[in-house]
Image 1 (cartoon, rainbow, N blue to C red):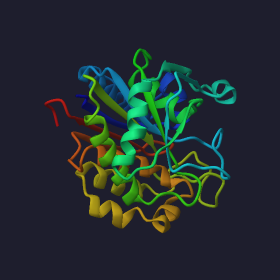
Image 2 (cartoon, rainbow, N blue to C red):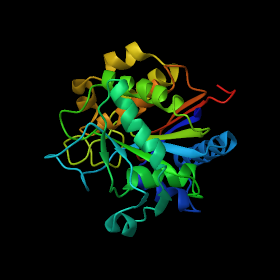
Image 3 (cartoon, helix red, strand yellow):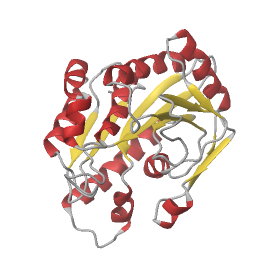
Length: 283
């Protein structure tokens, strides 16, 4: 049977790619985030996964407001990215095979667990997948199962649904009959405003929300998350803050256990979260 061995939650914020590469970087927050990203990579390496299930989102590059799934499993044979304009902006390239057998099993298993996953046989990875994977598994040597989550196009599924999908995804994976060690890489963000009145997307508009979010998720406080992560509160924190909901799905995969590592790093750009659950005899 398949076994979940490591859960990692990490940023996909593009500015961090550039700042991590700068040998002259001196901002303490950037340096701490770079060290934390390296720690996440080491945790995943120690877990020795055979496959990575990756939860992320798209930025209206291939799924749009007129045809938006809530949760979608990618079962193409192979995936690659990012888009040309992202690559020209410094986003690292990433390509890998897909574990099609596991992907199909997740879709089929969803029907037995009240989750009707959409699915796609063609999908291009954008920076929400390429950035975290380049941090956590830069070798690109493992098959993936990308899972798209809608955190952008209203109506966005509520926090409760993200948690439920996470708990059921765990059951589906653990019922898979193949002897696989499964790691999970989940990406999202904290408070974020793009093109709105409170910020330009280059600074954290609500650091108080950020600290609260990481604390609640890290402690496995489901009631607190459901209370705080309402559409109204997330919108007050920034018009794209709903990206934090991906980490609520990660809470579900962890069965609301406290994280072994939960950290909110503040820098001169966005606040970034780091989460880790070592499930193979660890935290």
